[in-house]
Image (cartoon, rainbow, N blue to C red):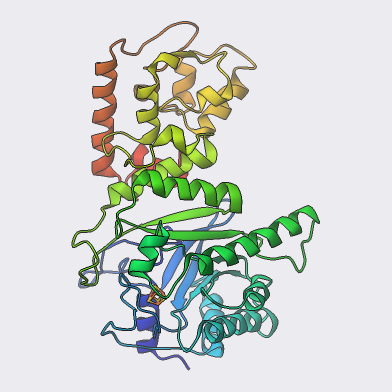
Length: 418
Ligand code: SF4
């Protein structure tokens, strides 16, 4: 039976993995209050049909043989250690599921004993859950670097999603901060999974196929000196060459002291800008070279789409009733959904500003870049446009940390509409 102390240690140790949208909140419970957003345990994920589901987020062990400089669970850290068995995890998942606490499992582990033994136990757990406990809920499994391919591919047949954390944006930083891991030990299993996914897709394999929800990865931002331009080039390669579903960015937080690490965190604004650029690459048809030069960082003052539009004012304004989809997607204030709504609606009538407002286009941004039936309501002066967008950017900087406000910024963080 899994006791409360081990459960607390292993859920707390898992909380720095950001592959779910609820990670990172610091709001603790107050005396007499209900709920506590800062403790680990339950995280949330989104299914392909947009539902938000609760997952038990836990490590099988935090007793790590590796010594990654930035990690609170590393070998040399002075923290309480705990481990659980596959059966203990299975029973916990089933009990929580029956009580309606969770709908799925996010299972990871520190590397205890050896990579193969760790991967073997993780694989045993998911196979038991599926075959012995008949559990058909969602499972996201973290892969263990340096584990045998055969073990990884076996686990991939029983889980919905798998991820290997790429950890740091360059091999040099990986050598410095996570010396036991190599770039190959992280990239090669991702490539294998990607090949298997492509095979399943081409051969229409459903039953017995691998990871139907695809693979994701996570990168720590700001623990090492790579620029946003370098990070985004790696991101683009992971999406285009490996077909990853998501790249998660985890802004570095100095939870351990080390002369090799910065003493201040990277800040959530940098992480937010990277997510915005990530959406541009995935859904708006941008190449990374249009967003940011290799050695540069994204502007903190403007979102990356506004920054691109201001560098390319000669392409605007565009007429909303005739512009191609590719250009509509590049207008600040018109999100991907908005661009498709415009394309559909204008088949029936010519659109004006009132129509756009009803489609939730953010006109205070978009008006500087569009005409409607030939009319232009924006500012002619590039400086005035810059000032207006910068004000918006400052507001965003202040608001972007709140997931709970009703502002358009909070909505954009969830929906990626920029
Ligand atoms: S492998 Fe590295 S990052 Fe993972 S738990 Fe161990 S020390 Fe932490």
